[in-house]
Image (cartoon, rainbow, N blue to C red; front, side, top):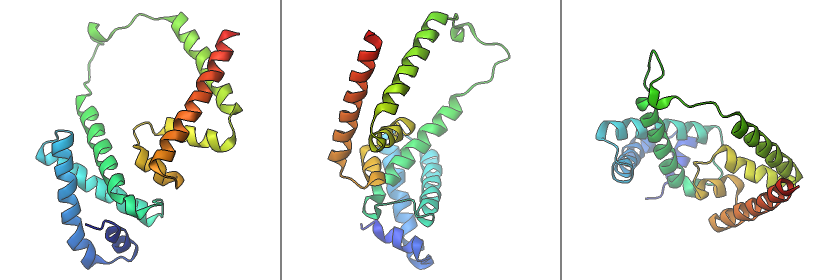
Amino acid sequence: MDYSKFVDAVLQNDTEELDSLVPVISSVLMKFLRVRVGADYHDAQDCAQNTLLLTIEKIKEDKLNNPEAIIYYLFTTAKNDYLKMINRNKESNYEEVPDSHKVEGDQLNNLLDEERQSILKKCMNALKPDFRSYISYWFENPGDEAVVVADHFGISVSNAWTKKHRILKLLKECCEKKLAL
């Protein structure tokens, strides 16, 4: 199926075409969720519907750069929506914190973490602006797949991976130097 037809139908507000495409795409998303992440039928149905609504919004706001890769965006969004739903359902309310969740304070580790974060921030600021923007996107969207990142930056998937690993290597070297001081 040519999923770019879906993008065109949304942009042109072609309700006839949307009426024929939405059930097909919804079915594909539901099968993906049921097979790949083990969602039950109703959860898959909810997530597929949410995904379509979010995607239509993104298309209307012109926030999707590559309509040919829309299926990857749909899969990633559906999976993330399902995982968020599962995490929300796992949350429990307690009047008191259970013993299994109590953690003793560890000020030394907190101080070390703050120092590492400070060093990482300095190393990030030392990067070229386009590298900083690129790796910041990955840090802010750790669940995004390479296809989505590549689409966002208008580059190939292999280029997205290569660029990410080069920048991470630069950051690692910088942090190691600063921690050694």
